[in-house]
Every structure is written in structure tokens, then in C-alpha cells.
Length: 488
Image 1 (cartoon, rainbow, N blue to C red):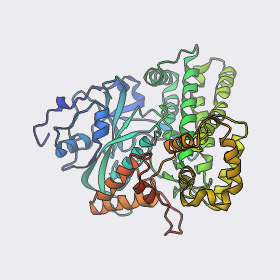
Image 2: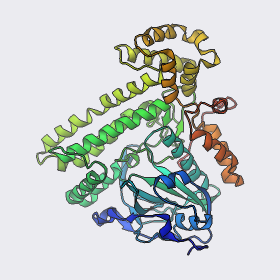
Image 3: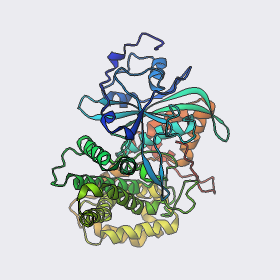
Image 4: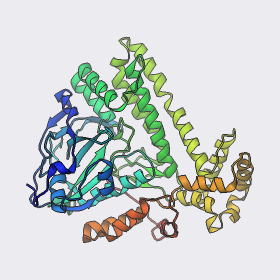
């Protein structure tokens, strides 16, 4: 029940539950665990407005009731989704172990989005887990997903974090929390793997038809399932290129963490590059470096092969022809990725047109950066603004001569090049040590001031304020490599 006289209808929820029309093997209807005294930690007013939701007259306690699962949105049918996945290359059955799809909401512009609660209690897919989430990791996902959205990278979003006031037993007792995640959908490569493994071709076809209708209704190919494969390949090529261009390391690119929509999903052990080292790994459990920065495009290709395998029965009745169709499609991923990456790199360098030697120029700069352990993001910002004496630095002298010869091959002026660079090279990124400071203060000391201050700066990464440029510095006080943990 609400603690005040909130009118739930006034918020503007337009609730449907289309996913529950799929074969029941793909989900379990379930109610969230009811907490006793949830309290609101953060709420994303701007995102709520984008979704056509009006919380202006809703008290914080009532928001906490909604986004902890205590109060069920009228018309909703919460469910936990089943899926499988290759985790570090090994296939296993998974599913929403501590999450529930609370509802699907139809926005004013008729877009269908998922509202998911994360940390809402155990489900049939918990595999012995407690179904709970800790406050720190939920705030971390809120922060990083907002940063990615501000960088114009397709991503799930975070609407709210609620403290449950229940202790989560890990190595030490932690404050429990529930994150409200917004996504185009939570359909993953692993969802298709589960469908074919557990439900067979009929379940697979139902899922594929639903996915096409929801995400790619424009597919007009004679073979619509081949069209689906090609659309997902295209979306992932763009997404992975965008990750590489900002130095984002996802950290756990299992097939269950590849969204069919092309959004970044699951911010467990992710982090951003400081010094440019392609082999950088942040995850504490990635001992072999499988998901290192340099490997992300190849891993995405590997995941897409797994996706293509699930679709084989739908591509053609002739097994060999189906395999040939799938292989031909998957082999386009890396070339598509390369086109997107080079296009983005030209923009980062303020280059408007295409020249034959662009790839060599880019590779030479990255080679210098790796050798000198140059900061990835700062290098491009310094080039744009000529900060820290960048253009007088002897390390870059030879490269800069080539760069200037290349730049004058275009009709655009230096000023126009600088403006282009500033539009794609963020003045500030989520620096790992600064994010951790903000999270520590918020989760351990219940002080959100640093979290909110840093988030405000991160939400406008291309503003190029003096404050942003001063704050966006690598951690020079620590000689230890930054490590992340899959708390989300």
C-alpha cells in the first residue's frame, strides 16, 4: 500500500505484458519479494519524463513502494525470464536469478520498453542464490549506464535505486537494494540458446517472430530469420565499435549479456581505459584475458556465431544451406565493425573525408599511445585543445606532421575539425577511481553528494567545462591495476 494518497493512474503507466504470450518455457510468472521498509536512494526524473511518466506528485516513500516491488502496478504480470549462455566459453542454463520483468510500458511515442526490478528476490532460476543485490553495485550500474547514455552509446537505463534495509550476506554484510532497469527488451542471445535447447523449433520460431515484430518490424527479407540475424549483426557491429572508441571494457561478454536489441546490458565488472593498453582486463575473474579490451570485437563475433547456430532450423530446411547462409552473414560482422570503428576514429581526429592511408595513421597513433602508456581519452582531448603542450611533445612530432598533411586534404578548417573532435571525444569519462570514491561515500556513509556531483558532470560529457577537464584525470597515486567484481 502507498504511504500517502498517490493516484497510481496519474503517473501514466501504459502497461502490457506481451512477453507472457510466448511459450511458458521461456518464463515463470512470479511476484517480487515484499520488503518491510524500502527507501528511495536515487530517482531518474529526466528518464521518467522521457518515458511519459509523471512522478511530480509522488512521494519518495511511494516511489520506493513501486520500485521495490511492494506495490504492483495495475495490469502488470511480473515474470522471471529463462535463458542460457556461454559463460567464459562454457554453456550453462541461467535465467533471471534475482530479477523480475515488472511490466512492459508503452511510451507516448508508442515504443515498448521493459521495466525490470533487479535484486527483487529469489526465482526458480536463482540456482541457490538469495536473489538479492547490494547497494554499491546497483548504484554503480545506475551511474555507468547513465554515463553510457550521455556518450550516445545504446544502453539499458536506470530509473531508480531503492534501499531494502535488509542485509545481503556476501564476504561481509552489505546493504540490500533494488535497481529499476529500463531496456528495449531483455531478449539475449542466451534467450535463443535456451529456446532451442529446451523448447525446440516451435519455441524458437515463436521467440524469433516476437523479436522481429518487437525490434525489427521493418525486415522485409524473403527469409525473415536471415534478416533478423543480419540486423543483430549490424547492431552489434555499431555497438562494439562505440565501446572501443571510448575505451569501454565490458568485462563479461557472455552470450547471456549480448542483447538482441543492440543495447549495452549488464554492468558487472566493466570499466574504462586509463592508459592505452589493448590487453587491459579489469575483471577479477577473467584470468585468461578472454574479455580484454582488444578481444571485444572477436568475442562479439564468437557470440554471434552462437546466435546464428540457434537460428539454423529457421534459415533453411537444408542443413548445409542453412549453415552456408549463417556463415556468410556472420563473416560480415568484423568488416562492418571495422567500417564503424574507422568512421568513429576519423571523427575523433577531426577528419571529415575518407583517405586511403587513414587506417595506417590511426594505427601509428595508437602504437605511440601504447608504447608511452598515454591516457586513452586524454590523448584525444589534448589533441583537440592542444592541452599539456600536446603539439610540442616530441613523442608525437613525426605523427603530427603526417596528421597535418592528412588534415589539409579536406575542405573543412582547423576550427571545424576541433569542433568535430569535441563533439565525439568526451571531456570527462567515468574514471574508475573517482567512481569508486563516489560509490564508497554513497553506500558506506549514506552520503550521495559526491555521487550526484560527479554524475551531473558525466551527464554532459561534451560540455568541455574547465571543471570537467580538471577532474578527468587518471589515478596517479595507485600503482596497482584497477580490479572490478561482478556485483551487479
